[in-house]
Length: 482
Image (cartoon, rainbow, N blue to C red; front, side, top):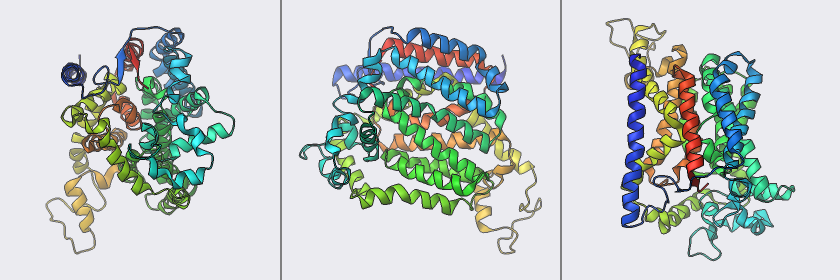
């Protein structure tokens, strides 16, 4: 056994202990005072072993991806790989959802009392409803919105209203929409990884993106839809900053980022990942005007329609602390959320994140040893006034020695920077206190980018088997709330 593999196993064991600790401590807290408001800490779920119509299909998909996934990903033509990845991700997500049956697993989930489909009839006149949207966010306001409607900007609800308008109303169609769109998130991550690193790493990541434990919650949670929109935001930006049709892809990225911010307040943190993409790009400036133009479209449209994003966000914070958010203890969830994350990304991603950290720690040393066009000769103190070395460049090199030379680093280092940015965004969300519990659903958009770290692993079949086993156990032993 290699030293790196042994360290991967140690990291996985530590993550497993974190989950066990969160379960034991959470159960004790819930029995003592009931402040966690979850049925099976740290997950929003209840114990309920079961099988369903999706069980055979889930087993077939799992065995197929474990046995053939790495080989197929390495050999298929690129475009065929993208289509295959999307189709396989849908098959995996559908089969997991149907373990709970069609009604509970798909048709009913988005129709419950706190979900978006409850208010479709209140959007008969969309602009008028948007003008009055903030007046129904607080719990004590008249006809207050259900929890998920109040907790998100109205683009989330308007999506399902528009589906209803075109004849795709009801929970079944809404669930199918979330599964179909949500499964495309893996394709977006593959596109971005290939553009910013290299094709070999993207191919190695593909099976892990397709068969993630996160699919248990991606199925019919609207957050799976949000994850896909956010992922395509980054994918188009990656294409733009690497020179592929920068006007079109830059505009598309901005447009989708604007939509992302109006689907979920917390996904504004995708700006952190976008910043990493700009650092990694070879043409950072040219797409920016087009991205900014695209970014303005959705906010301007909703503002002209009468919705005030900032006012709604501040009211949401007040509503959050009026409800369970004000009761759930921050001291538990600030680390309990991380245990939830372990379960949605799986043991392979834990090992991948360990390798991501190791890669970043090595990269400054490697880069200092390589030549750089604007680096001062060895032994010379940079002259900040001679025009050859700028103050900004010197400061960046002091704080982030690898930042100016990311384009010249190995593909593994560039992938590590991208994954690290997603992890930083997730940690900010955690520390904010606005994601106490239910983060197995809320953090799906960030989790998709953490999965890309699995490209750094050796022995992919063994790690894929661990991923599949965890997902199957979670879906068969627990009745998840989403």
